[in-house]
Length: 116
Length: 223
Image 1 (cartoon, chains in turn orange, brown):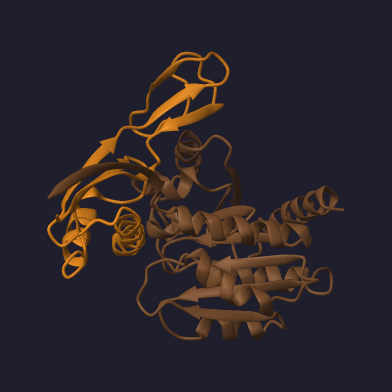
Image 2 (cartoon, one colour):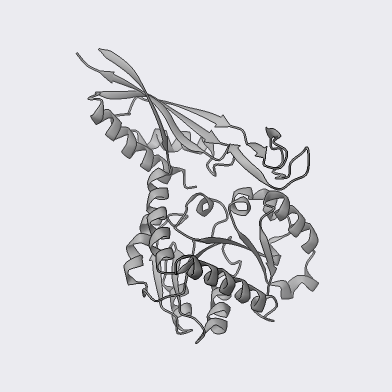
């Protein structure tokens, strides 16, 4: 349950972005959350809704895009998704895999509104 | 009224990662091997550290940072072994963050050889937060059951070492040691595995030898 800590950090970035862009409010926030990021999208959404009250993003809609786990084998070059967390290449059984995506926790984009 | 879309692409844990990178650089420059210990509550992190303290005494200088939600109890246990220890109480947070460690760091003796950071007992959240460690240990005690690695994958995929603890209880438990090793290695083929007991001392000399070798290679890299 560290989603609230993650969201607290997110709001520091949101406030800074709003100031930088001279925006009056943030209306949309899109996150990319890897399946092996360690956070649960539903809990992030609850934490976001709890945290946003009284902030510049009070009316913001949160969109969470879940990113599946994908790896590339350094031995044979095969790229594929990982099911049931078996980190062995399905082609050549090598354990030397590079994680391409699926562990990230990224603020992808925001939608801002400015009066006048 | 104007609307605008801004692409940000910022890591939500970017601030923590940056502080962790600074801690790592500062510790490695001084040749201090930092180890972050993760496990569920009661798996035996503090008992393992007590045993390491007994075996390293006189041979090496170690320091310990203890993370807990409340109480000084773990730090007191470590100090009783003659090892400097600092307690971080998170007051409710389920994990340590790099900035909490950074606050204690100036107190760690600069001539330390090892710094152990015992995380809050929790097999989930601490896995997402780097603390500037060179090695991450995940502990799994035999009474917790042999099904844990696949249930808590991130703790195992992000660790360097798996320490199976309370091996003295194996005769009394339906715990399949080979199955746990195989599943942990499926999750993370780089994982080094030690089977230990703080009661009988099993596996502890091997673990100490491993730590000493890691510490030597760190010192050599920064000599």
